[in-house]
Image (cartoon, rainbow, N blue to C red; front, side, top):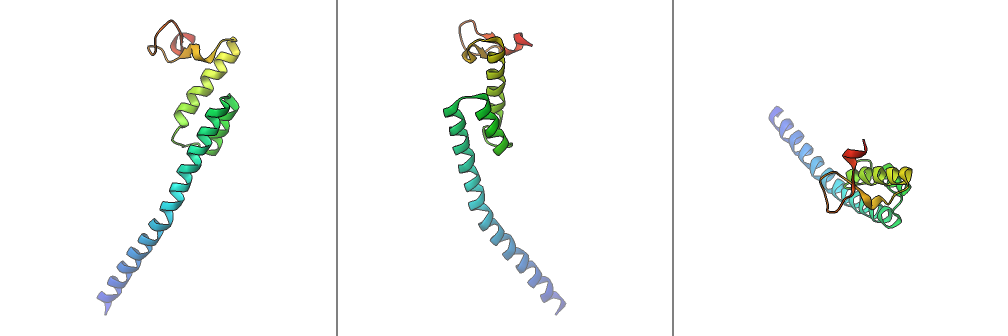
Length: 104
């Protein structure tokens, strides 16, 4: 009888794991959709505040790294009174932009 107790416990654990995965998957999809919608809204607005809002809502979001970079670009551009398009990581792009490495 003791052996059946282990079998029942293992089956209960397997059932709970299956149910929790089934419930978690739609929540994860909803979070990913919300993350993408927040990102598209931030991109459409294109302001430092919009990207900060994205990070507040999605601190580990799919686009968090890009949001940090864009906030930095926009902040430096605003402080220096130049176009954010002139600021990009050193060694990228063409022309003669200001590389972020040369700013700091």
